[in-house]
Length: 443
Image (cartoon, rainbow, N blue to C red; front, side, top):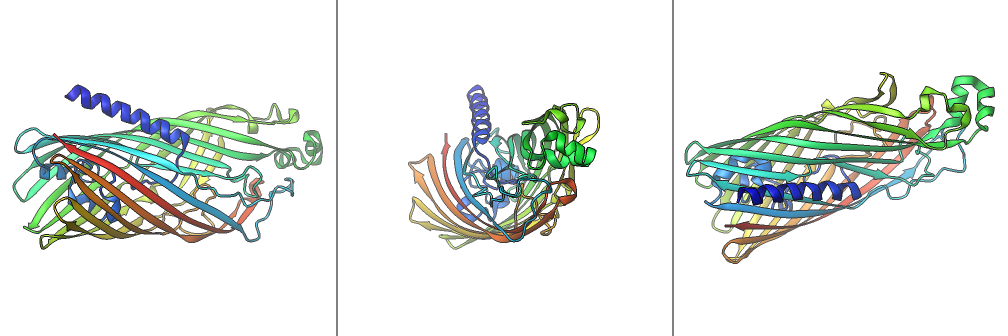
């Protein structure tokens, strides 16, 4: 059995990473399992209804029925992100005819997840989760006015999280786990060769590259591994009420890779500013702490709530450095810490069906229009969710969920004119549709 579970976990990890390479969106992905999607993940650290508790709070494994619990699910995330230009300034010496709005920068993706949990006696449980905690994808038309600040951005991760829980008493359980995570970052940006030449050698150098409007692209790809941990506790406050608290640590990435330039003019062939080579990016992911509550209101109703704090301020400015120590680029985010608040309810409709609903307010880490990046034009979000669970025989359960996520309109006024990248000024409009399906089986 252990060999089969390990093999399935490895296969799931390969599937997730290959799927994300094809399509990815969003930086922090909340879709860790589908059973909580219909509640907007309210009460996630306390509900402990299936093997997905390995991610949300490993202490919850102590509440699962004896036996082996297997969960396989997927969320299809379909975002739409559109930019309205309101006075953007083209980059100096660029082609003025290339001034598009970028099209729809959002890309749909499938995010799968796999979880397994089993008991080792009356007090101990072990589990394993394979999921996708972070992802980002924005892709603009190559002729858009902000192309020198970003054309395409992708962040891909896969997280493998073994965990263990211990039942202290009928009222208290604790748990923890270790996370191994692999991450990959791909960045594509237009390069203003004309502005670069003029900055180095004035009018003669500009003439040597062919005058204004000479452009190319820079593509950078880095990847690496990181380790972290998660800890949780679950308390039965009353026979009908329980509270869960869960902490997930930051991960310290040291990403290595390469960068290359296309359409490089011969006059700049020897310039170290646009040379191909190896690069490095250091990144600390945010840590988070969640407090969740679940209250059984009679035989049919269950109320859920959650408050999660995330330390996004760990991400400020990220220098992308060459092997010789010089800086190729600096990604400026200046993120702030955030809160996510959610509430939901379940209603048992007969012996087989459970109906679910929820709402959430998800604060954006982006502080203002001046620091909002074209790579992540995010803002505060409102989740409206509903779903259902259906018992399949004595040992199976099928979960379906849907969330509509409305992103608040986001103003941007990102001035990078001094670096030859122009000024992007306008407003982003975005929304996201999330569809989820999961099957849980106990044996």
